[in-house]
Image 1 (spheres, rainbow, N blue to C red):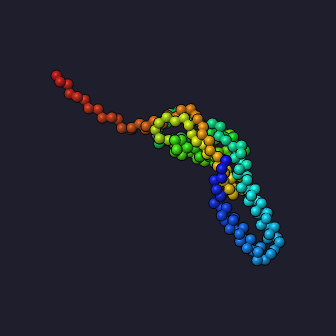
Image 2: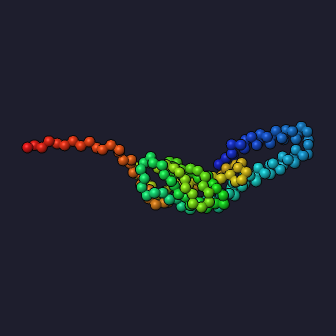
Image 3: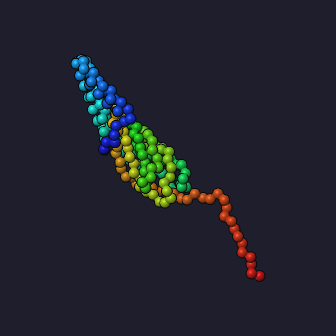
Length: 168
């Protein structure tokens, strides 16, 4: 688990907190100071909750159809073990093929196919921010799955046939 960064709205929260610090310094109001301490503790708990969420989260398996055509949309099937939903990014051969929210249990992620070839390894990246959603954490793992063959797309036009004239 490693930190991934603050959420988009976290900067507004920090700015509002700094304005509240200015108000507390100017007025000396004890109620504002107590509110600032409570908010600071809530932010610290929010940062830790994302870490706690990913503590036991993992993708146990990845399943894909055995053969697909290049460029087709496909469903990636993941077995997710987590307490709540986590955001999943699936990469095959350094190409992101699927992403989305996955609930605990078996999840289907819509995605695309990688380049043509034979694949049996995927990198799964789990992200979570806990309930407050202030700070995101990320965790990655490499998983193997049954071979996935990505074949070239078949041509829709028939091949031209040129018959040679006989030498009789």
